[in-house]
Amino acid sequence: MCSFHARLIELESEIIAKEEAEAGIAELTPDCQVMLEMVEKEVGVKLADRVPGDFRGWISYRRLKENLHELVINRGRAFKEGGLFPRHLAGCDVSFGLDTATEYQRGFDVSPPQDLDHLLVNFGRSKSGQIRVFLWYGENISPYRLIFEADMEEEPHNELREAVVEACVWIVKKPKEKTLPEFLETFEGAS
Image (cartoon, rainbow, N blue to C red; front, side, top):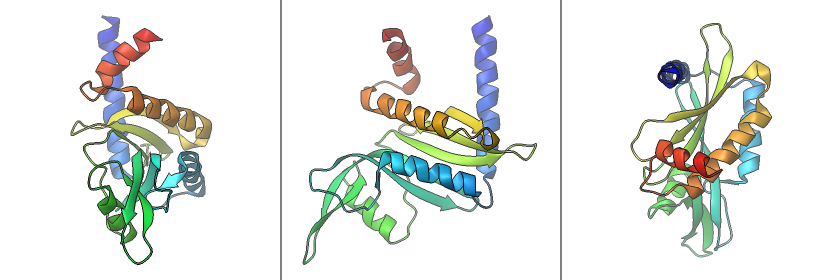
């Protein structure tokens, strides 16, 4: 019975978080900006950055739609861009990865590819006016799963960094045929 109530509380919390995140914030505060920069620095490579030809790793990129300031984190790899002086750009780790890099360079909105599990960091405002940060896990066409939330007043920089690292481990270790909840059951049972 306790797990039923715990699951209902978790579900209600996720619904509230989605409502707050969907409302977004009109402008990033300096603290929100610093937090996004910290995560970008931790990831290291941004979408469309020049990279060595053998690059395979994590990339990040920002999205802005209306009041939604978002940072996407997913797997990336190098793609050769033609021209007189060929170079390699970091693109999303999908067959059309070079397109993701060139569209991003042109200022187009790049949605996270459904083929890639990814993370999304964004902000919202609670009913009391507090700015909150959220970390979401996206997989295939399933709705986002909330994996971290905190009030910005609590200065959750380190906690967010740890949550991003742990979620990246999940992405690397999770078999494609399992959903995140299925994987976490076996992952947590193994540790």
